[in-house]
Length: 307
Ligand code: ATP
Image (cartoon, rainbow, N blue to C red; front, side, top):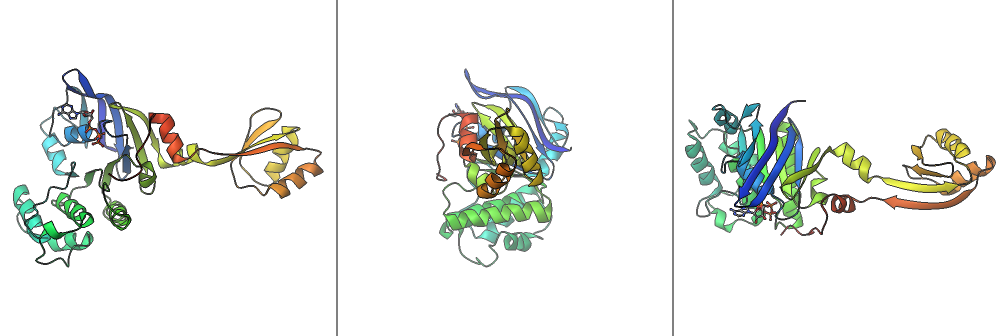
């Protein structure tokens, strides 16, 4: 697999405090990488470091295969757009003026593409309205448009849905999916909201105390959190036979217990087992929710609002 970003034992210290501590992560090309952790876990610090706004204290990282110590890292960074903390927009300018300003900063030869990008983020009709009068969601979308100047293929978004209302959250989510699917942009998105990330992410990096505690794909997370029924029977041999016949996925735990990973029609199962002289002794639904999975991984509590 090709990786847009790879970090190796990355460290960032403030005095004795390690904001990043031996952090190793890999963002696959084409992915939406959910970078998830509690407030203060180190998400913004990592983003600041990979954007070149801060130097690492130890370890290294590479962008498109170029190490942070190599000169060509500058070229890799040109392929990257980012919103760090808050969108970099001028409130006394219109959406179009903000875009033109960013084009000038990047030294782009013409203003071609501005209209199309504003249309893409749903801001083409805002005309003379200054961004000061935009809703928070519109400002965030303008921030994304500004980050898209220069056509990056790696977009880094730091908590992009923070403080947005439900409608604003949906708009940002749809925009991120569109950028990923239609423009093949790899996206790293940081958040403390796993539930929200789970609607988008193809890969996850869980960060706690400045280190990655787990990296996994969306399929692996889904498998870890899927619904499962723990069933106790008089004998698991006939149970296995019946479950095979019903084409249900299961895992035998002992000669009396098994996990069944599917929605089960209990009366149909009980009937089939009875025909095989097998009795159900107990049945419990076990549901490892995203939230409890996350809590087990990083400990402590999580905030639910985007604030
Ligand atoms: P949040 O969601 O609250 O922004 P985060 O995961 O982005 O959290 P960071 O902003 O990266 O966390 O901060 C990680 C830790 O580093 C925090 O404990 C923070 O107080 C500390 N920190 C960040 N910047 C500095 C700094 N310039 N000097 C000292 N400590 C800092």
